[in-house]
Length: 303
Picture 1: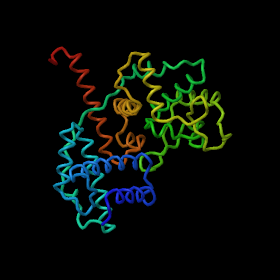
Picture 2: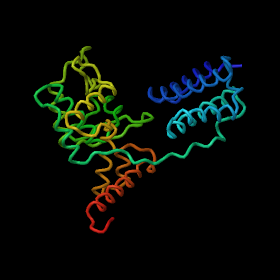
Picture 3: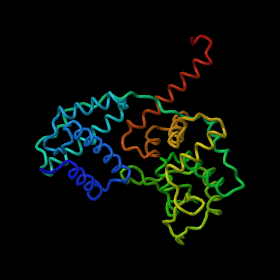
Picture 4: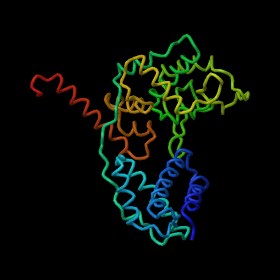
């Protein structure tokens, strides 16, 4: 019988080769499945189990252990989805006869509204980077692009010169599942990008073609998502803005501000690159919450 570690390795290879999954998606599946492997090895007294030995009771115990350890419902739901995909692949390959994860119900997610910045707070943040140094110009262009186009941070750091259409105010973005879309760049973002590209350090490999990364460090190497987070943290400290703010907060703020000003929800869905409109609809709820907060603050008989 195929041992579990080898089965996991084959599944991850399938995701990479046949499904053309992104590196981030594969990393998430790997972490989820290795966590199950660790749990089952421990409960089996150190013995390496096979996929065919895993029962629904084993998986219920695993999910219960995650809950007791304080994992968020969204994390548990994601791990269960990973298990369903893994065992479905196992059925196709003949490792298992049934999918023991299929009958299990995902925990009901709590629909917490995302943290957003007001337009005034966005303006303070975007004005924070100094404009008398190349790295300051980069940071301004980076933050303007995140907010103007509503990008995920992974989409931002993946941008290359060939993706920019500055004359038209457009940028080609590769999103989740390698899906491509055109995002819109406002005039502030276009100006900031032009200023940054004029002072961007040369590529250390001499690349001047369309594959040259847009956002790089002082040595000309592509920025990582973690670097973007650290840069943002620096400006949050300088401006005194909420430390809960992350690069994704700018994406949430982008969508919320559009909905607040009457943008059609379908248009916002397209701009965000959401596959399902149900994902986008949270911003209509957030807008309603913003209106209620304003009402309760201003109306003399609200409370």
